[in-house]
Length: 244
Length: 244
Image 1: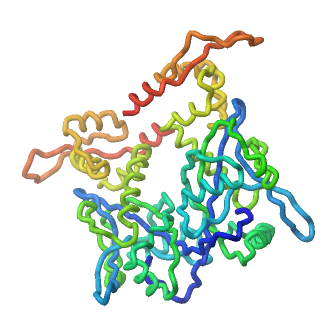
Image 2 (image 1 turned 45 degrees about the vertical axis):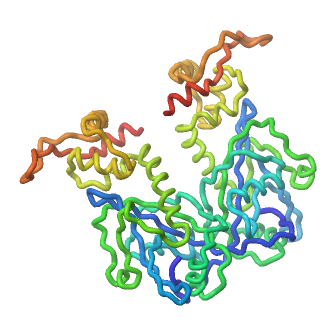
Image 3 (image 1 turned 135 degrees about the vertical axis):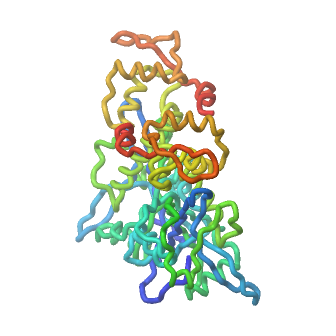
């Protein structure tokens, strides 16, 4: 903060938080979205958006992210990481978004800077049912995502880039998305959806072999129509030792 | 953004940008600060703060950071990276800060969320002289930094953590702080100030040996009182090849 010249109007902004929660169901990477109902030129429209809302006056940013996510989706106590502030003046350039926002906020909307958070969770988390009625929170496969409200497609895209860099140096978070015992193929699929590229099966086995914290078990899959695959487990002790 | 319950007052915030610019003079890591003059209980006080200010209504965040840095210090066209939004409600808990801010802004101050940027530059950059008169921008060694305005000590601290993680995977930025030809000792001092720890001289030579993009030259220092050290250069081609 410094003395402000008086000639240029200051941004009397509102500040929101938006949460990008990625889930993995064993096959696909999905993102948690909520429904938005609005009106455009007399027509009712339905589309989707990230769970997000304005912050309260007496609320820190991290607290606001947790509150908003819980209020809109029922998902709580997850590790939300702040990854970027989105503050382009074009965020609210779509009149459809502005009208929706002004009705929702019951005030004039000038410009909103949003602080974006990201998390990765197992998809067995319960979405609150009463909230589901109101906001219809749901998991949408990244590949099937349509045009979202505001700049939310951009926010999801940048959240993915952030997550890819993050797991590179903190692979732990990936293993938290898997069951306690997992097959090489399950791990490969997870890598494939996070990095959005194919990994050669044989090379991936070599990759696993050098991950000292991925330990092969004597146990194999049971009752599968194909050749039963070996199970692996994630060894957190070894992981932590290697990280020191 | 979602429908807001009406019971809790919304944060009608102002948004600022703050720039943490680190410089290296060959020996020390310094941070670019500006002077602040305020009044507290009838007493005039002088202290320091990061170059930062409110954003304009029609200005994107990145543009605001570049503008503010240039206006307050004369430093321009540097690679400022957004690294974190600071939005604790306690940011403006010090009455001294609030009074200073309200006088500077000529309006009531409720709460300010600041988007923090960080950059590393060579210290041969000129600080604008006319601006120097007004804001007295200056380079302060990290170790000598006193209590800054607002939460700026915290912002500098987190910027350092960010920079350490960043150079780990983008060592290129470190070499941009060095002269074209540098000695092993100059490189070691740079690592030491960035990581804030001592590196053993012999081990550091081994570390250099495995950095394929640090190439020893035939040339040695001239006219030095001690044993003339070999020069090295940074080979960007090799660096880029290895990064692929």
